[in-house]
Image (cartoon, rainbow, N blue to C red; front, side):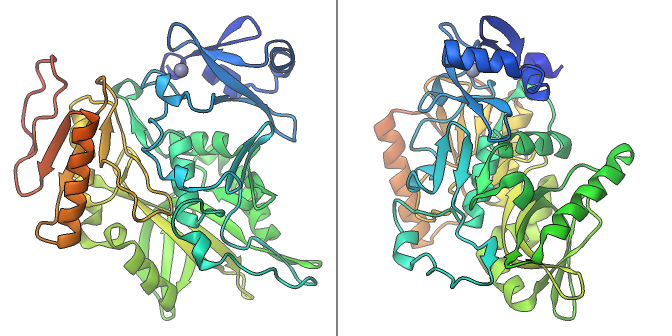
Length: 413
Ligand SMILES: [Zn+2]
């Protein structure tokens, strides 16, 4: 059950299953507030000695636990608070004001306008220079999508988790956005994460979507846009552009030809022919407006290619690699770039060996920039003294079985 998978924590002297605390946070509010006042933190029991956890309380008075800053790497690879070492995430390219973690939760400065005042003059937009290089002061849509995925631990896989479907993704993403704000709007109001379809909750979900839609557009002196996060089921051309149909969601989203073309250029691997090979999935984060006719119109978007276990991958070859790793019972994490394009990360990090091993998938040969990147990466691993597993896609899949474990030495093709 979820209890053994999610691990246990100590809160104010009591040992509890984390899943129970998460699902019944209100019931444990007194315990949370006492532990916060008397001890100042909770403890994760995935390791001995135990590891500290931050107790946060949202402005709405809802408590939740977060990993202690800088200690994510010390947690067990299957622990919900486990994180890769610093340097293996695009998150570090942002300044503290872009993603700010406070006592009440996380506030994100998104590089897009969600609420526009119709009376005040708009302030100047983010300048190009601060978007490049280190210390970005705002997060783009892809950065937000990667942050959501990484913080919800959906970039990781552990054989103990056994399965992952949209129901699990949705629950984790919702937990993550609890008490979080985007450009000062509460994330739960500004961001609609498509809930999994179920007959029993269909009406309730339809009402929640109507509430989200009702908030968009002009209200008094303000104009609102919204964000929708969902799995892309189909994209079909229309007279003016394209129509996106999301899984578990009835209302289609429309995009203009110009934006559709730009998105296909920016997210080539996501929309390539081969993208849906190996049971791959695609997920999109859409910035939307309501048209005068009441249609949901995409103003901007970010997209991600995922394996059938919802683990991000940068190409269909990486999807094949992630599938093979999961098939061999390996625990791994996919480092994500956020908005950075120049960052050099391993394609996958194996977290079931110490020190962690790295996986590289070589798909395109002969391109100079690619070869240069490959050399940088190889030199980097050499310096780290880490094991490197390399797969050239022209060759059969390499042996991925865990060293010392027998029985899974079969080669995948
Ligand atoms: Zn832990």
